[in-house]
Length: 276
Image (cartoon, rainbow, N blue to C red; front, side, top):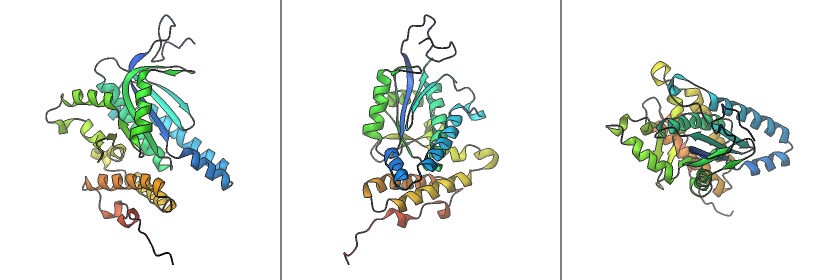
């Protein structure tokens, strides 16, 4: 297959070659179960329309440029199949701008998908990658997939070992490190995994108009809905409990938010009961 010369993995001689890239692999948490449930409840077409609308808006956000994305490279390729997505950002220099672009666009996409009821789990790696309409290939894909499938566990997009090594280099550019954009874009979880702080998008217009309270409320509502829905399924419930704890942690970091913006802590407790 001959790629268009505007494609980020284009080669002038037409021979496919991998490029060192920022690689993202993500999927929709519990998608197959949700689809089966939709069929069981005779609402499969409604579910399909909901998914299509959410993906359309999310893919639009992947292509969106705002003043905050000024200077980010626009050279990346995507490959999608229903509930999976692979994104590759070929690296030109030290990878900081490409990783910054990935964080910005992924955060916007993840927040949009969650508000539509679709929770994303993913991994970010740096390695060799090639993408065209038919092929996704490279060790960067293998590492990103391994991070998503074996380490991410909860609805979070985590950094693999290779991405963390680059992160350490990029953080060394800033003194103090709190001045770095990564300080807000990323969080460290209790298990040591570093993950994308997608709720930071709530504050994307902080200086001009303050937080997007409506989007935060949508996030709260959908998480509370999932906690109620899966109260009798502890394994799945725990995934949404993780999101709820993340939501409340985010609210605690800023004076904009009070208890009314947080998820009710009683929803995060499951208790045994008498059999009668």
